[in-house]
View 1 (tube, rainbow, N blue to C red):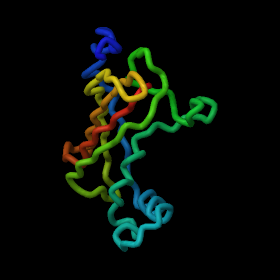
View 2 (view 1 turned 45 degrees about the vertical axis):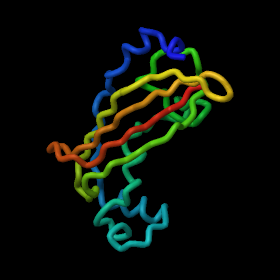
View 3 (view 1 turned 135 degrees about the vertical axis):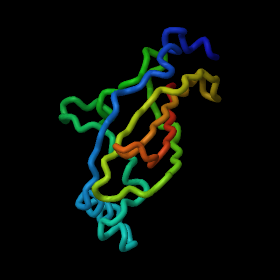
Length: 151
C-alpha cells in the first residue's frame, strides 16, 4: 500500500515549518481557564496554564477569507498526495513542565512520517508530525505527535 506515497512525497519527511514564537500572558491563561471551566485556583488565577492550553497556541491567525471549507488555515508541510480528504488521526502529548505567564515558547513542527495502508473501507495515508515546544532559552516544555489521516 506504500505505492500510494510517491518517492517525491517521501522526500518531505524531515522538512520543518519555520519556528513559531509565542509569548504567554497571564491574561491569556485566565481567559482560556474561564472558557474551559477550569476549577483549580492556579489556572483561574493565571499562575499556570492548563495542559491543553498549548494545543492551539501555535496556530497562525489568518483572515476568515483565507480559511478552507473545513475552517482551518491552508495546510503547510503537506506534499501532493493522491488522497485528499483529511481527518484527525490522533495526538499525543508529553509534558516536561507547566506553562507559566511570561514564558516565551518556540514551536518547531516537522513532518516525521508518511505511510500508506489499506483500511476496511479503502486506502489510507497516515501523515505524522512531530512538534517540539521549548522556551526561548531552550528548556523543554512539550513534545507532541500529531497524525492526520487522508482517505
